[in-house]
Length: 224
Ligand code: C5P
Image 1 (cartoon, helix red, strand yellow):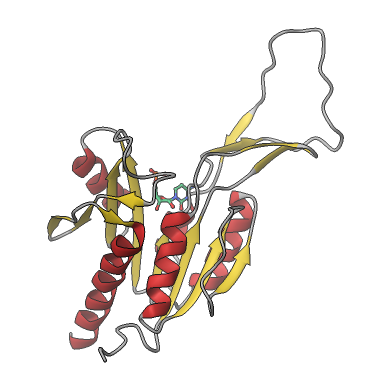
Image 2: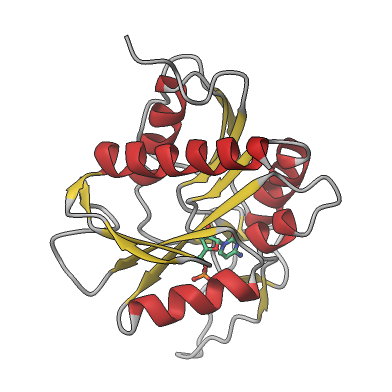
């Protein structure tokens, strides 16, 4: 049978949402299901990679053989990502990291007051993939996602440059039939050489394409 394309390679993937605590019982988060990241972990395992999955809270079972690191906050995800990605072959940022977190987490449950309005001070979270792409021991290939609602290719390309990525997987989240909670996705692969559209397929098939693109990139690097 076909040779495994990522044998001897180390692949690190972030997946799912992050949770940013407000107090002991409340948090800010988003609707990320983690399906794309878990599909990537499965596809990387199929190709024989040593696979590390850094996951926010999701309702999914990781594929057999994957090293699962569970995190909650963006700061925890950043610490795990920097540690695991150093010297890795491929890093894939599939997590939907909360852009902002509460400035502080209250020690006790916050009480409802008489005022109808409530201001919650927020501060920006670190950009995990951009930090990984600038590590001293940078992974050979850093792959990011771009969920866009308009001018998909253009926004993905600016992400490629701004975050120092090697490949951006872009999808149009204004389409109700694909993306976020769906089992299907239709994506555009954007790198310095151009854009390649993949037809709508299951997240597993899309993940297999992305993993194949990564294997090809690594093989090219070995030849030069
Ligand atoms: O800037 P934007 O959030 O659209 O970029 C999406 C890409 O960046 C995804 O690969 C996501 O996992 C990653 N990201 C990250 N840390 C953040 C925000 C996004 O790693 N704080």
